[in-house]
Amino acid sequence: MAGKQEAKPLSFKAIEMMKPGDKDKADIGENRGLRVSCGATGVKSFFYRYTSPVTGKLAQVKIGNFPQTSLAAARLKLNELKLLRQEGRCPASELKQEKQLRAIEAEQAKVPELTVQGLVELYLAERIEDRKTKDGKIIPGARKKKGQDEVRRTLYADAVDKLGDRNAAEITRNDVITLINGIVARGAKVQAGNVLRELSLAYEFAIGLGRFDASFANPALLAKSSLRQTRIKLTNNRGTRVLSEAELKKFLQWLPGSAFSPTIKNVLRLTLWTGCRTGEVCNMAWKDVDLDKGTIHLRETKTGVERYVQLSTQAIDFLKVLRLNSDTYLFPSTRTRRPIQQKYLTENAWRLREAGQMNRHGFNRHLRVI
Image (cartoon, rainbow, N blue to C red):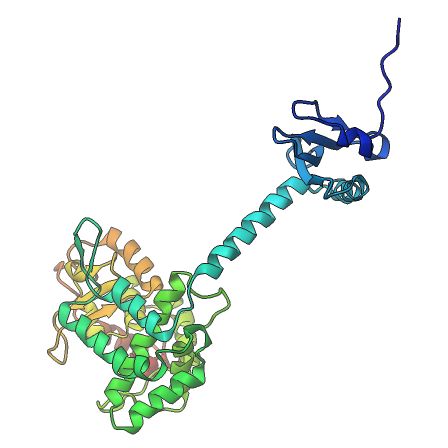
C-alpha cells in the first residue's frame, strides 16, 4: 500500500503551472502559512493564512500577485508578517485599519479649502439664517429676520471685505486684532465689538462641524483675550469693569461652596455664561428658551430693545438639567412661583458680607461687577 505523498515546498514552476479551478498550494517548513491561489481570470496571488492572536479566528492577508511578486519576495514578506503575529498583533486587522485611515484622509483631502468668506457663509446659512429643506420645509434660523440681516451686514462689511479670500485655518490672532483695530480707528467701536463676537461664533460653529484640525485654536477668541488685556473699548457705552480671567476662575471655584442658595448660585452661573444682566436672568421664562437653536430671547431689557443671546454648550447642558426642576420660569420663587427678584440677590449678598463670609475673599467686589 502506497504511503501518503510527501508535501513539497512551493516552486516557481509549480506556481506557473497553476490553472483556474486548481486547489490552493501551500508552502512548508519555515514558510508554512504562505499559500498561492489561482483566480477565475488566471491571476495567481500569494497570501498568508494564520490564526489571529487577537480574535482567535482564521485570518489571511494578501502579499501580492505572481509573477510581479516573486516567490522569494513573498517568503520575505511572510517572515515579516509572522514577526508581527509573534508580537500578538494581527496583520490583517492592522492592514484594514490602515486602509480605513487612508480612506478618511482621502475624503478630507476632497474637502475644499475653507476661506473666511466660506466660513461666514457656512455660519450664516447653517446657523443664523432660515434655510429650506429638500421637501420645501422652512427651518427657522437662530435669529429673527432683522437679526439675520444685521449679522450678514456686520460680517461682510469688514471680516469678508478684509479677509474674505484668506484660508480660514491660516488666520492668526494678529490678523483679527489688526482687523478690529482698523474698525476702532475709524470710530466704529460698536461695529468692532459686533464683528469680533460674530466672527468668533462663526469659527466656533465651524470647529463644531469638524472643519478644522483638533489642534486648531479660534483666532477670534484669542484676539478677544488680547484686546481685553489692552483694555481697548469696543462699545460706546460708559465703561464698566469686568472680571479678569484670574478673578473669574477664582470666583467659579468659590461659588459652589459659598453660603448662597442653589437658586442664586444658578443665577450667577448663567449670568457669567451668557453675559446677561442679573435682572434679565432672573426674569427668564422657558417659553423664550430654545435649546435646539441654543438661544434665549430677551423680551424685556434695560435698554428696551429685544435681543437674542446665543448659548454656549456649557450653558445648554446646564439648562437641560435645570428644565427638569422648573416649569414656567427658570428661577421661580418657592413662595410666589413668579420669577425671583433681583433684589433677592442683593439682599443675600449683603447678608453674607455682614456675616463676614465674603470680605476676606473680596467676592463682594466681584458680585458688584457681575
